[in-house]
Length: 83
Image: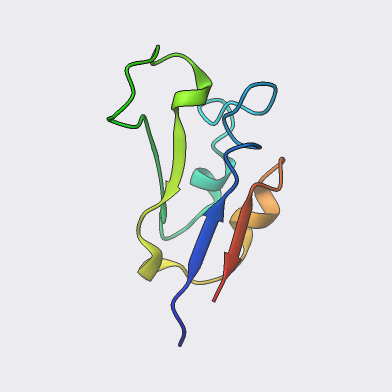
């Protein structure tokens, strides 16, 4: 089985004028093996309530079953899964 790659387009998830990942979180909720993590990058010194500094990251790729539920659940179509 080839390695799974999950990409998140941050211009659609968490950027100005787009969805706030803290309010959405649909990919977090739908993913049965819990591949995703919501976090604030450590390197930023911006306001922690600013949606631009919060990120959803696919951390545990080896747990991904490639069910595509996250892709289908994302209202901004910000997630792509490939292998």
